[in-house]
Figure 1 (cartoon, rainbow, N blue to C red):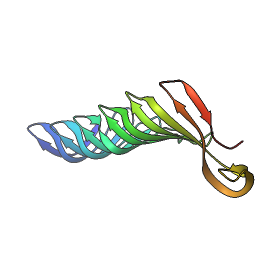
Figure 2 (figure 1 turned 180 degrees about the vertical axis):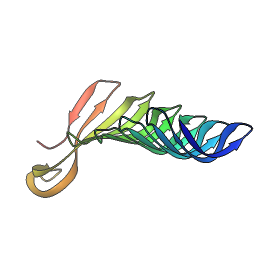
Figure 3 (figure 1 turned 45 degrees about the horizontal axis):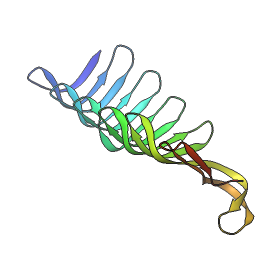
Length: 155
């Protein structure tokens, strides 16, 4: 393990760079020995989190967690979990899930988007339009309470 930074009362405190024995890295602020304030943590497996920390846990209204496969969550974190508004974007399937989260699980009404080119129904016009560049299309809405899925587009 390697730590380059400030100390207070024998604890990490202030801005620092930390590297763990397994290859994990953290660049950011510490307070009383815990990650606290702005910082970026990069796990050896390729995952990363960039945002605000509080008492060693992810705690931000607009943090970004990126998995090794480039799947991304951008949104609220509280108590080290996805809590509040957020967007979950998968790189492999080019889908985006937008909605509320609680304890890392989606809750309430969720919106799903797909990214792509091609012919899609134009809402309210009753005809197809040819999309020549990638665009995020609202695909469906889902209620975790009623378990109802409403397909919106493309058709």
